[in-house]
Every structure is written in C-alpha cells, then in structure tokens.
Length: 139
Image: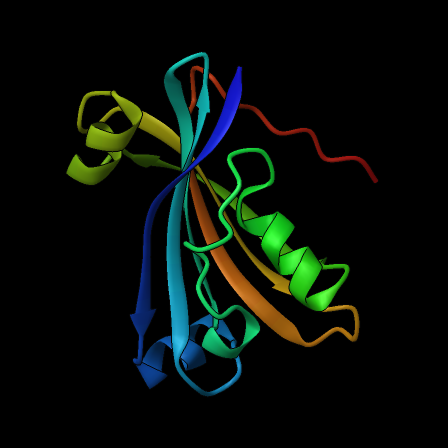
C-alpha cells in the first residue's frame, strides 16, 4: 500500500530563497511530505512554491495524489524544467524520517518545475533511500 503523508506546510518569506530557487518574488509555501510504502518511508520531499498558488496545502491533502494533485488542479499541467541527481550522506533529519543511519547513502533528486506557460513555479528536493528507490530516464 502506498501513501503520501504530509509532514509540514509552512509559510516562508525569504526573498533570497526565491532568487536561489529561481521562483517568482513573493511569499512561498514550504511543504514537506513522505512517500510511505507498506508502512516504510522510502522518500521524503521539500517543495517551495508561491503562496498565491494554493490557499492552504493542508486543507485538501490527499494520501493518494499528495501535493502534485493539488498543484495540477490549481494551475493545470506542470512541466519539468530541469532535474539533477546526486548521492549524499543522510543527515540526522533524513535518518529520522527515512529510518536509516545518519551518514547512510541517499539519492537526492532536485528540480524546478514550470506551469503550462513555462514559468518556473515549483522547486523541489527529494531525498530517497538508495536501497528502495531508483530512477529511469527515458529520452
């Protein structure tokens, strides 16, 4: 069984983040969620996007569609602008959420996603257990 679990939804007003993440100016939401499979957390993510896009991500959270479902309903089709992949050592927070030892290797997928018009809208960072998650890129 698969479940998308909301960990946190917080309002953030840090203009430097908008610049660093390539997002439009203005207050942001930071939403953290975890993907849980058969009771085990495989991956967790942090997302940043303009507050004006969603009134409150907590209100309409679905364990099936998670944040992407809400964003698609609010703005329509989303399109990736870029993705990057790296391996990192699990932080204390990663270890707590993923149930691994601090320092264990994890797979990190960062990215920037645009709305249907190509405007940057969502910055995300996904941190996954390397023993549970893999990615396949098709061109």
